[in-house]
Length: 66
Image 1 (cartoon, rainbow, N blue to C red):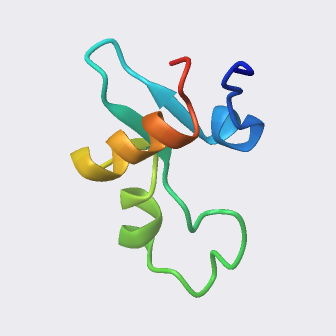
Image 2: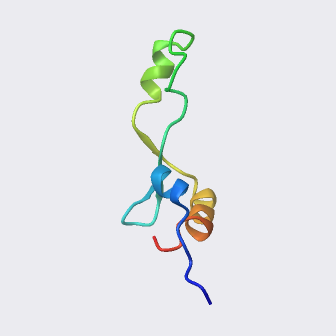
């Protein structure tokens, strides 16, 4: 059996916390800030935690080595 490889695209986009949750950067802040409200821009700051089922799938298929 060959070794399981981590998907390099996922490795750049997701991070696994110590408790096993998956953190991702929020989308929607690359360009087009003029059309977004200040509240939207403020709320898109920082990172977020994926829902449990989605996070489990990311770990299983894209980040098998944690």
